[in-house]
Image 1 (cartoon, rainbow, N blue to C red):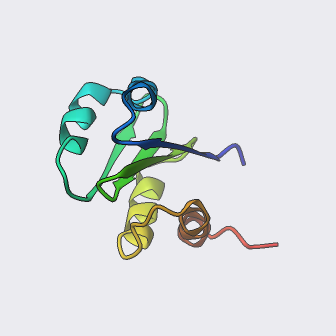
Image 2: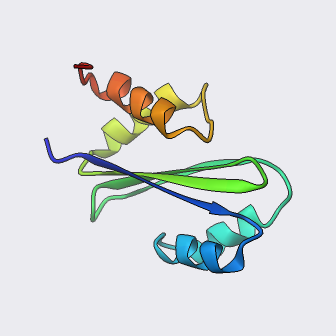
Length: 107
């Protein structure tokens, strides 16, 4: 299994951190516009060419991007379904949601 979960975090009021955060995301400038609002944001995207899903969560002060590589669009949808009820800034909870969605057993 080559699936990897990577998490990046930035404070929305830290311009340097946000520039770095958004630079790593395709169409990051558009995401930046969405995040510029004052409220919570929960969004996702899937890139067919790289088989990468990105799940972005913000509480209006902090933003996290959970990037999951080497998965199919169907697996990304399963993760979305598992994550929808949680949608928190919590790396451990996201990992557990991915494990449940993809049927990984906890050891």
